[in-house]
Length: 287
Image (cartoon, rainbow, N blue to C red; front, side, top):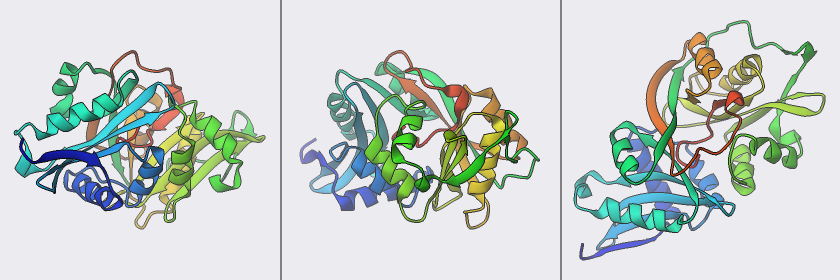
């Protein structure tokens, strides 16, 4: 491993990592890297061989006790030579002492299990143009809800709502994730309370929706349809947790097809989050 060095990612590296992820078929968001960088500026590592970028990983810290591994990529020419595992070890060392989560692609899940991770559920990407199903109206428990631009709501309300579905504070990330140019963030509101939240962002393939939180399938459907209106061709991709049967039933009923799967895995007991209201995870890269 002469000449192999690990360092923090630069802004240019973050764009390079995005391209690598695209080449892997993961369909990253065009501007995701800007939100990623503020989540944990030191949480992105690049391994270089004689100065040439060869592998990357994200090891992002949330709060004092949670972390998330993602974007674990070794370039094809450098695979099988031990560079990736060196970078993996560096990422895990950065998160030492924390509960760590990741979304593992199928061909890596056995390796993650050997590193102490255990499956909690699968996130199944569903893609397509959602067809009308008559369940995206404004009724919620007998009272009307309104779909509004999330930027019009106090950010503290959005952050508190997000914490119901994510095990650590991530205010800086959430602010960027919902507010970056080119993406749309919508919230369902009833009587001043948030009943749902969704964000759609442009990608090289189908525009990805995430997160998609909702109190009921009707709220989720309303948000999904409205978000799809903000895409070039109406095509969307949503990473749906199969631990929420209502979410799987909803996207299937809307005609979206499963195209990709990753296992949500943790190094310890899965944190308590409101899975019943999670219709789409925010990001397979950062949780």
